[in-house]
Amino acid sequence: MKTLPPEARLTEAEAAAMCCVLVTRLGGSYPRILGIRLASGDSDEVFKWFIAAILLGAPVRADRAIAAYSALDAHFLLGPTELAAVSQATLAGLLTGAGVHAYARRVALTLHLVAESIADEYDNDINRLHFFADDASDLMGRLGSLGSGLSRRAVGVFLREMCGVWEKVPQNLNSMALYAAHNLGFAGLQRSSAFADELRDLWEKAAQGERTFADFEAALMRLGENYCSMGRCVSCPMVKLCVGKVHA
Image 1 (spheres, one colour):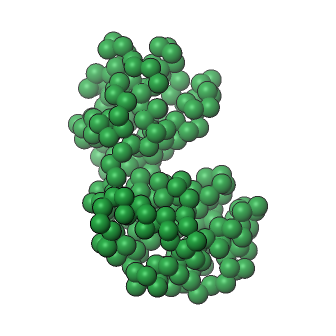
Image 2 (image 1 turned 30 degrees about the vertical axis):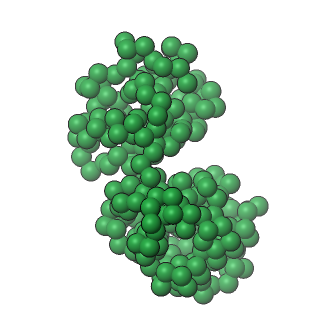
């Protein structure tokens, strides 16, 4: 990643406008899309997001992961007790019906075992996992060891939205979000923790109404994953505003 020249970086006014355009075109956070009231910190809402994150972290398309979440919601299977009680075959059938085909059994097993872990180890309360974690590293380790083990991607998807909800969540910016923000001219820093702090300051000054920094980071991550890292500049919804391409 090249450092952008000073003239390529956004002014504060330009950054505020860019924040709005980016989230409008790329979409906000998945909890907002799914109607999960994550900011409340309620254990039931946090667990719903955890299940959604596992689905979104699986090797399936995002639209199918969302459809799978909706199927579980329709069958009242978004709580640890309910998920632990239902058969894996039933879960796999629901996932298959939502379009999760090749990985349905594997994802069903993961959901079932994770729900059992939360029920048995944390008394059906995922917030207790955060309470007992010593620090960010321990928190990530506890999440990753649930069930038969979660992928780093699933844990990362989950924690990205938990900043501001759980105090022990690592504050580093997702690498794809970092890449996209650099290309859009938000800053030239390369250390993700410092970059994240700078972007949060810019976001707060932009005053985006009900939208949150999680919406902004999610939009950046989609841009980085789906366009910047794949070189899909022609079809990118932000191509006319990209300074990274000009100064590559």
